[in-house]
Amino acid sequence: MKILGKRVIDKDFREIFTSEFISITGGLIAGVFLLGLANKLELIPGLFILLPGFLEMHGNIFGSLAARLGTLLNTKHIKPKFEHNKILLINILSSILLVLVVSLFLGVLATLLNYFIFKSYSLILIFVSLVAGIISLIIELPLTVLTTFWVFNNGYDPDDIMGPYVTTIGDIISVLSLFIVILVVI
Amino acid sequence: MFTVREIFRESIGVLLVSIILGLIAGMFLRNIQDSLIVILPLIIMLPALNGMIGNYGIIVTSKITTALDEKKVKNIHSHIIKHLFKDIIPVALFSAVYISILSTFIAYFKGFEFSYFILSKIMLITIVTTLSLVIFIFIVAVIGSLVVYKKGIDPEDVLIPITTSIADVFSIGIFSLLVSLLF
Image (cartoon, rainbow over all chains, first blue to last red):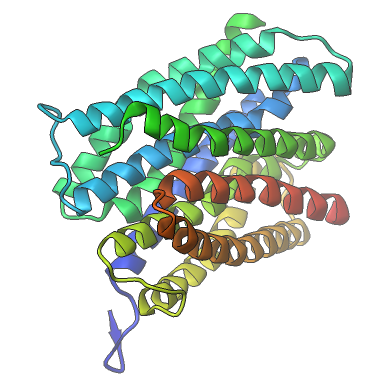
């Protein structure tokens, strides 16, 4: 868009604005789910401690995956395809390993904090963290790779779009995964 | 080309630190849990606000890494960095206002009693939290990317977890502080 001959809204601005707008709307959907989870969060006090770290873990791991793929695509180190794509496979395997290790660590640490600060012994937090992590991994990993390829193939810059997309989808899927596991546990 | 072990080794340390910071954010959250349950827009906006601020770290780091790989950025005075800042601030301001209005609107349909006074307080909380952190995260992402890249490490593996963690801890921290002051 040009005003007085000066370009004020460029491609980057448009892409960042659009992706943030969608991200926030998705975040608010996660917020509505969180509202439904709020009473159950109270039943396992440690879950309030676990929640930000759990949401953050997915944003970090899949945000980094999407960013790496975006850079590899932009710099033409990989092509947006699954066949004969060893670099993609390496990135996928490392993301799986990271989710499993970090979910376990998060669960253990939340359990310890819950025990030492709130004097509440709840080993179930480790189970909740690990199983919810695996559920969201199964959904989020293919979504992240496929969407990065789709975005790139359609002429957009994955760097502008994938970050907000991954964190939004990650938030919704993470809250839903927690919801599923908590329903099973309680 | 990176191996699984290299990506894991580069990422795990920062990820574990970010998880610890996330747990600290969880403690802040627990302190205001009563307000969150009573003032519905606050809990509805929480993931959106938290995620949105972290997004800016991902966007800035990704764009700078690509520009560094393409040899288009050499220092903080680069045109690309100034341009990116001018793109991000108006989006952040709009996002803060949008989150406040929409979360209040959704809360209204969930039975929350609407008032302009509460809406203005919610808007103040989101604008102050968003703008202060977006500026801080931008500075960290830019300087961090330049420093880390010079050491031969991929900035995306290091800076994305760092900026999102800063966003998580401080957004919930500032948010909790303002909520306890205003409500």
